[in-house]
Length: 526
Image (cartoon, rainbow, N blue to C red; front, side, top):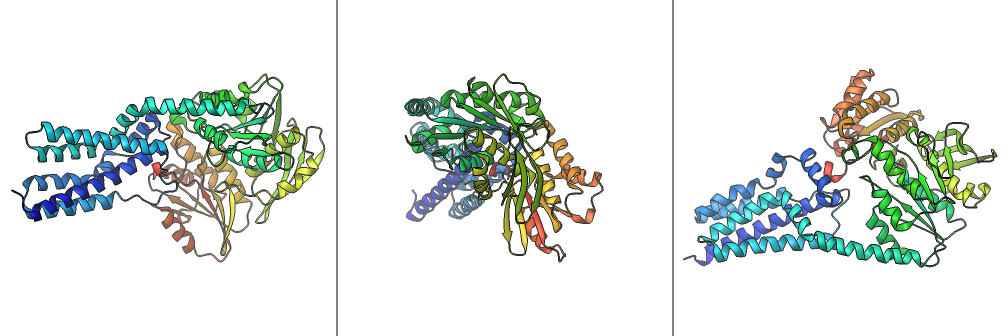
């Protein structure tokens, strides 16, 4: 019979074990949320970006504690408690770029998971012959199965989630039907869509009451939430960002909002792990053009080869920085630490000069798209000059930040080859000490090595130093830099972004430092 001390030790062990389970489960749920609650993408993350050793490391101490508990001696129980405390420590949630958001869906996942644990333990208590040992073995088995248990939880909750989603979607559709005069502009692209959304909303606000989807609310349910929570009868224009990871994602949003206008900012080999081919990406982005009515307009970035080469039967308004056949063309771009200046011709060939606090041809290209839409919707070009001058950098999208004696070009929000090269072109325009900090690009499938090696070659004459984050992750960029003859002593490879900035600070040069931060891997890649 257990005495009081043994009972206390047992309760302490169980409490510590439960705390370890909770911490581990929060990590798994966070990764599931980062992968948009999609089982296929989550399984791809498990396959590519996690590994058995890493996951076992999060449960190793709990595994080691079990035989100690089964032995049952007081010393073993104390050791088991220590092991469980270590389990809690190794499962401490790291500082996340995008922390776990406790949405109602996440709460339902956690509740269902808790029910599974409870049912399994009750089964062991009522039907097991050696109840304590059975409970412990079941707890450990569930702990180890947590990366896959969440898929079972998702399957159990699927009917509920689908029913809730259908209700919210129908309610959003009702709200839109009650606003027949609302102009809806869809914005999509492999990159640039968030910047164009913000720029366009700012320019249109000169003359209209405008609502845009906030942050990265670019999925169907993100759009639904924006409509239900923020759209009001006084809004005249709704700028709707549309993201996609699979064929049909843009069409699903278009079937809800029925855009009268569409902007396709870019197409590139992004999210190839889910799209598989560039043709699928092109077809998906042009689902927006297909949804625009015959009397609407489709605004296309003709600087992009995939967009220029795609034909559509809709009324096209082109924009960009190259080619005489472009309706709205920006040119004579000049960049300095204080911003950019450029000239722009409208569809009639009339010339206007613009100034902006933003830097780089990439930003100018996005501004040109926003100007094209705003002018087409009735705002005179002259009236757009002041709001262009007042545009703010979209956070982490070639955002110019003054930080003491150095200037940061923060382009940390994801990365793609075209955007990477455009950011390097911007860096090359500066005369100061130019430093590239990057972990490279991800989600490129079979092209990941070649695309990263190519930007490595391209970066060789655009920067003075390259600080690469992740020895294996950046191997292709290292190879590209070496291939282009980049000075070996100026290529620095580190393990973390914190180490990267330590090395930036240590570079011995009296010139002002211009630091381009290109990509910052999301938490499910860390």
